[in-house]
Amino acid sequence: MHAQLGDRLVVESAVTGSARRDGEIVGLHHEDGTPPYDVRWSDTGEVTLVFPGPDAHVQHLGHEAPAPEPEPVSGAGGPDTGAAPAERPAGRALQPGDVGRRVAAARRRQGLSLEETARRARMSPQYLAYLEAHPSDPNLATLIRLADALGTTLIELQGGDQERPPGQGHALLHPSLRDLDEGECRALLSSHGVGRVAFTTMEGPVVVPVNYDVVDDGVVFRTAPGTAPASVVGTEVAFEVDHVDDTMSQGWSVLAVGPAQAVTDPEAVRRLEQRAHSDPWAGGGRTLWVEIRPTRLTGRRITPADG
Image (cartoon, rainbow, N blue to C red; front, side, top):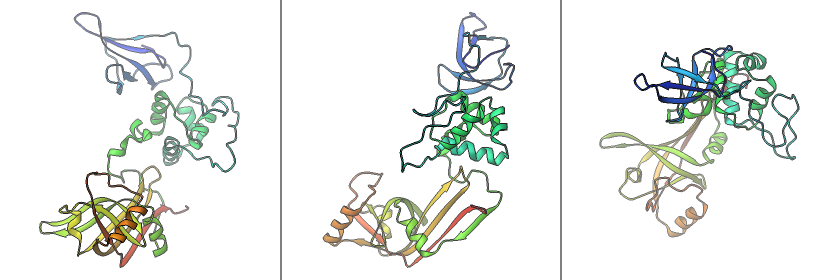
């Protein structure tokens, strides 16, 4: 059995001989087109690795070559021409897309050159270089070949591991862990977003995520009276915010400790409502503002030792 990208794999019923399941072959594991194949099934859209049995056959669609690489964004040179992409308008820095960053990081972890990775993935080095350096949207067949060449998975290259807790990426070979000074901590904390409030209840320690802002050096969030976050009023709490980049195996965390108080002054509440950036994701009537005034602020950042 031999196939090319874009051919269909048809699995027949042993009883009736009619097609029981079929799908597009989106990935080859051998240059001569022999099994196994990565197949995107037409009934579910899922991609699985298939070792065809005697009830399966390949339906050739007349392709003479593997599916072409996707074209880069408008105005750029084609991936196989070797032409340099057109320049962007002044002031707009070129940044790799998330897929490109993941591909580049996986290639570095494997210690592979651009040329060797391109050879393994059966694509041009020019296109791979473009993919790593620019926002782009490669097709599924391209990603499957790259995942196979880089010893990773399609899900990880696509960022589909976002339902997993952060920190499952590969550890850095030479990490650098350093403490952040107070100014760096305040700058990272002030970016606002989602943080975690840690406090003690009658049942024991509790950690609750909240949407927060920083206003006048105070960490503020909205909640509803009678909820768990509202119970922190009048106590000392810990508030933690962090960012983990699994692709690059680096990140930072900031910890603020201090008393939590309810904001009840109407003018202060009005000022918070005007300056808040983040609405509570939980929705509903969350009218109680809670402010944490940090008395202790610490943080750490992990990066490559040569970064």
